[in-house]
Length: 206
Picture 1 (tube, rainbow, N blue to C red):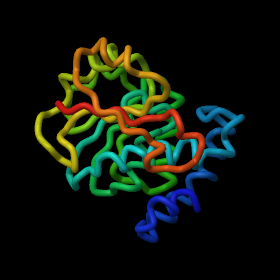
Picture 2 (cartoon, rainbow, N blue to C red):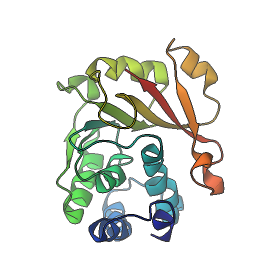
Picture 3 (tube, rainbow, N blue to C red):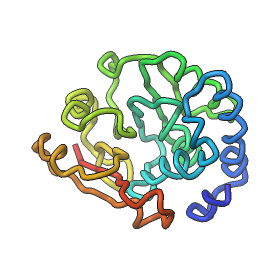
């Protein structure tokens, strides 16, 4: 929790309680359905919660914005972002049912009303969204093919609507294959922990 407050000191009491509750909720669910690697579970706040919140250092979503998390796994980045942005609507999508069961359980345990977990392939989602977020689910050219037509033009945050993608390593070749313009934000510019040294938030506008 201290790690979250270090970088997000202006949380409300309700948000502090929700972030604090994450550890026990994920520990309970992870014992039943393993969605967070056991070897790094002790680093849940660093490697999963804070990593997810790096998106908020790049773009603050406005009230009423609609955000799709593709391949949400156990709820990252969407659950930490849904706590941080209670006035924003999130759809957390994953095709693996047991992962969505965990997202449902954690969201219910937190009393989060602004996140809708869905067990669905992204190609089957009919709506359009202001932003699409994700954490390294596939190579970027394939990802763009899945979701580009689902993003509305406009601006419902501090950046124009688009993709905010968490990814590590050297991305130049992969991004070049999309033939699109990308902005790379080094997470180490926001968070000083060594874990974030090679990690980035990759953004493009619709």
